[in-house]
Image (cartoon, rainbow, N blue to C red; front, side):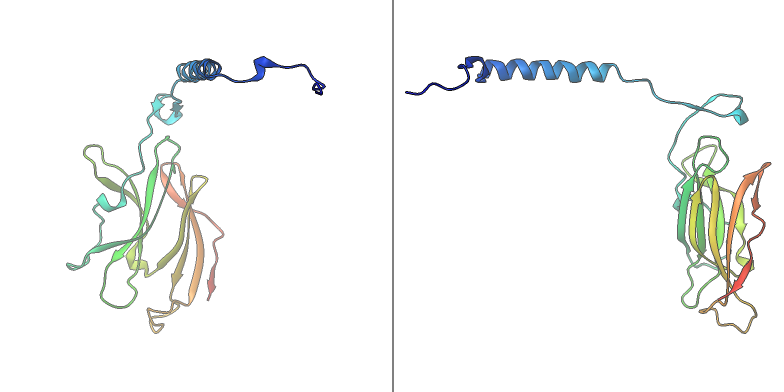
Length: 190
């Protein structure tokens, strides 16, 4: 009989008591880690006197009353994007809406929404694009506290509403209590 090159290591054979001890030790480590979690993070805003800001979900675009005259047709939310636009720690929602017409491509409006002071509804706090501007809005996004979008429009009333022939990339940023459209956004023919 040949003996192994290494000595017999009887203690390396796991028995149920070893597994139980390991499981108990791991449970203790996990429980301790759970108790030692840091407190909830809070943001402060100089605009609100340094008070901690509470984080709520962005306003629900479908709960807002939009200032559109649709003649009895429903309002359709075509796009939405959310983010903290004014730096107060609360997300706003930007909604592209239009009247749901039976045919053609109705013009869009772009509204900024925040939470109502009371109740669960969102309220319109700014209008970035009026429906009277006769624009269709695509590529809506909120990045780095700015709203960006592409506006499609018409060079003349003779251009069919299905086929806008002008394109303009635009952005708005909150500054001094209002949304300011960025300079240098040139219109281009499509």
